[in-house]
Length: 170
Image (cartoon, rainbow, N blue to C red; front, side):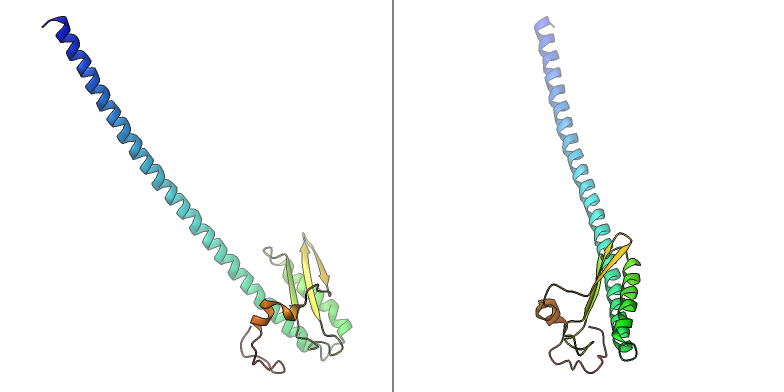
């Protein structure tokens, strides 16, 4: 075997080895890419599940709080017959503030009564409290026409006689 033949076999062997190495490299790259994509999908799925769980927890918390606010509003409404409104207002402010401070997911709460329902001399009787850190600022003024708001119109059934207690919560 002469030197040319030996060189030819050596170059051919190196060329075949390079092609095999390149093929292995491409296969490994493809495999790594697939593994990375699968890992990312699982990671995103896990994050999504956790986010959905947290969101549902927040909704449950807000829903429970809405029931608390509703119960407070109903209690204050019943008390208005026995307690003068000016004495009841500070009690309402404290009750709503205490409820708001117990829930760190909320920044505000409110009670909005039907026109003239709470105080026959006052059309808009609303208490809104906003949380600023550990301080709660109550306000008896509301800057929108609540009764015209879509959320209000949807929440109050057209056939509801407001002089009678509802069997279920709104």
